[in-house]
Image 1: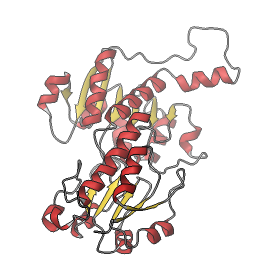
Image 2 (image 1 turned 180 degrees about the horizontal axis):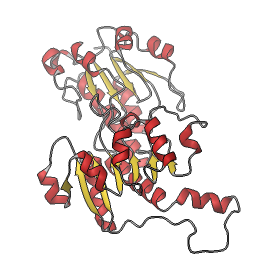
Image 3 (image 1 turned 120 degrees about the vertical axis):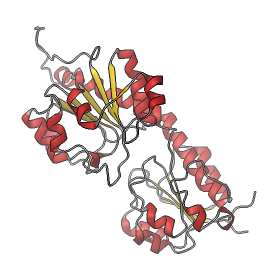
Image 4 (image 1 turned 90 degrees about the horizontal axis):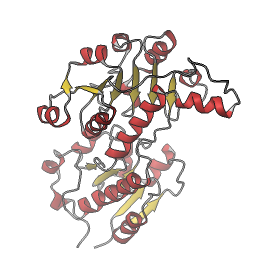
Length: 340
């Protein structure tokens, strides 16, 4: 049996994962680690491939699927999010879509807390004061921030990451409230958190941290109306997906003082242009989508993305299947291309 042909849109930070790909597959690799393939390159290199291993920066839509051809069996993404993939169209064509949940939970939760501390204690501003020689003699109101002890943390989306964020909040002696599309009584007991409707959460929380996937329902979930519900002393944290927050409304809120500040790792436009309005504001901390940027998480993501792809091509259930409905359209035995 000939090796399946696959296109990999970026080198992965796991020697073992890359070796496994070359062992089982005929690999066409986009070797530029820092830059994604252009649209033209993607359409050209996906042609005739049996599998695709992509990143969030690669838009996998109907045009790409058409270019690949009917033999395409699996799209494995090196990410938890899959909003860059037309999952519905993949399912119709019998294409398995896989992602990498779980392995980056701790990393993203830790970055969430890094952002909370950075914005509440004005760490970025303080660093700039020192570096630029603006550090004055000590005075009582210099760079005052907000203590976390006794404050209320509002978590929007109590999934894997949101749950870890809630667990860490215990160490800061905070009250934790949450909103999710489904109440989670087991987690309420385990984590000591309280359910609130979204509007009530926004009104009560001193810090609102977003942990929902990007869907049609969550697009601009936090807009002008929602931001105006928040306390003028509150902070908004987003490590989920940029389009969950209406950027124009957020800029207005930060400028006009509807909220005290925000800390963001994700944006509606990525990379964020340096002349963007957000970059001109001092009451916002900005990070370049580094939620999963730990050596441990990125390696685990690579291993899982490759394992997902290989398992499907072996006719086995992947570790994480986004579209289980595909099993009815193209059963695993009809996907198999790799013998044990």
